[in-house]
Amino acid sequence: MIKKIIFILFFAWVLPACTISYKFNGAALDYSIYKTISVGNFPIRAAMVYAPLQPMFENKLIDTYTKQTRLRIVDNPNADLAVEGEITGFTLTPQAVGEDAFATKTRLTITVRVKYTDNKNPSGSVDQSFSAYRDFDSSQMLTDVQDQLCEEITDEITMLIFNATAGNW
Image 1 (tube, rainbow, N blue to C red):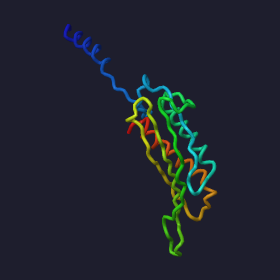
Image 2 (image 1 turned 120 degrees about the horizontal axis):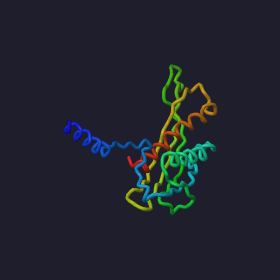
Image 3 (image 1 turned 45 degrees about the vertical axis):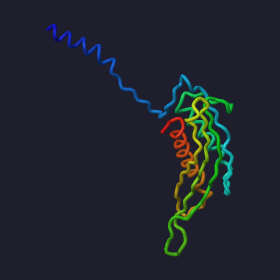
Image 4 (image 1 turned 180 degrees about the horizontal axis):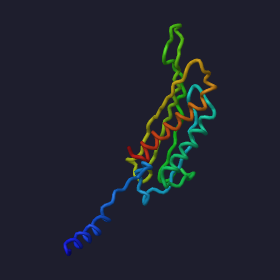
């Protein structure tokens, strides 16, 4: 009987010390060091321009850092972390050719160059281009599908950027 009590007390003491912790947001930031982030403008420098893309992208990027981290968004390039860049590509390319030698699928690709500056640890800074694409049926007009495609593509690109910067992947 004494052995059972000792056994139970031992596990009651040991088990609480053994915990598994998961972070579902993917952020790999030490919040005792990093408190603020500045998200700059991302002007469109692509040959083809879709005007709503810039504010759509900037808002998604701010939302991603706001929802996935505890960082405070500030309007100061000297924040603990800073993200800035430019939209360098908005291109359409034919992907599949039908019997009549016309494209049956078209690919919309968006490319964004990002400069991520870690003012606390310069080795954590990133200067990289990210791109994503979506294919659509060539029988559709770009103007009919570009809002939805740009939403999907910017969602993917912002997650790629987040994972390469704050996610530290």
